[in-house]
Image (cartoon, rainbow, N blue to C red; front, side, top):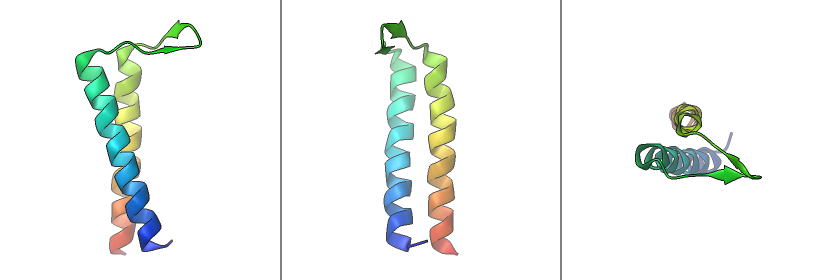
Length: 62
């Protein structure tokens, strides 16, 4: 895996994780196709995106 790709991917997943955490903490409403998305879904997204962020940055060190 290219180091540049891993760094860009890690940074992008990090931004997504932070955005989801801010959304969950502020309880901003999200509607997808007329369906309300509960805040706990954002916490799941924080864990997933955060894990991918850590994984990407760890792969750069190898």
